[in-house]
Image 1: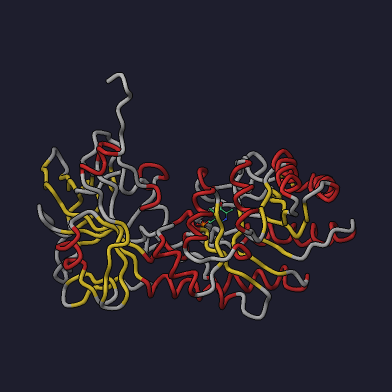
Image 2: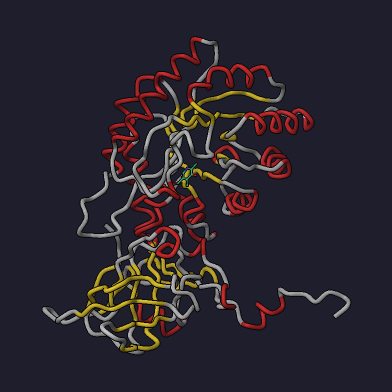
Length: 421
Ligand SMILES: *Cc1c(COP(=O)(O)O)cnc(C)c1O
């Protein structure tokens, strides 16, 4: 459920007509709904009710300071994957003890900054990383809390580019080697082992891979405790899918996911962390764009939009399907026709949809890409020197620009000429 609904014939974000934002901000732009963000965070929080838990928003999904500040005020922790994200989390007022640091390539500088500013734990992905964290922490005279990410070798049955829990993926250490690596970790100076981390992929539409993975984590918890490790925290990653296609069977709900977590891991007495990204931000955002041209082709018509693959790369990169709807509500029963919906970038990959049935549309009409809140604006670029797409946040009947569109002048000023030119 989200808060983008037609009202008086116009698609609204909460109580604000998207046409009103378009008139003021120009297109294309991303628009987020505070009520939807809040609702989705609470769904997870409530799903784990009755357990000692922390919902750490995986901010790589959408990391605007306004989104982070909104979630932080609800008590969210943050899952960060870079020094830049750590800085964003801190700037949004998230205390270090609510920030977990994931990612396979943490640098010495990033590790040192996080130890300096405070960190709940590092989710360690490899033995070389463990050695570096030990060295950096020891050098600073501090102790780094760590979990070790184990790769449970389960098939998440999702898109290859977002599947992370198979043994051939680059993530974590093989679960079969976990006891050995935990023994190594426990012997290292500057390291305190606090728990286990697992994350098997993104956009999961089935609970079964989670069950398989979490059963392995439960077994491992018992084995590591028997080896003398104080396993007191389980970080369960993220990955719950969202319904991009409304007609498709619905992915599991957070409450169903929570029930599974409690069933499989609830009796271990561990503090539980989950790291949802997509499910919190995905349906909380839309990308609004204007039709520049309606071009008739042979056997098909093209809707050429002012948004392009540089603004929303998911269709080009993951073959992702987004619901694309007219901002002005079509008359009931109006006939649809198939359109190829494309952007202006000089690549055939700049195609959002092929032969998509749409009501009649023409130049000047606005369309909205639904479910664009996650992995949308954060993956945008200025390819083709198209200004970085702006972001807008709505709360009730108010809206505000939370990242402005840069002017050409601002874009040009970022380049500097070498002294010989
Ligand atoms: C990407 C990622 C997440 C969030 O995944 P979603 O599918 O957006 O929920 C959580 N944890 C880790 C370690 C990740 O890499």
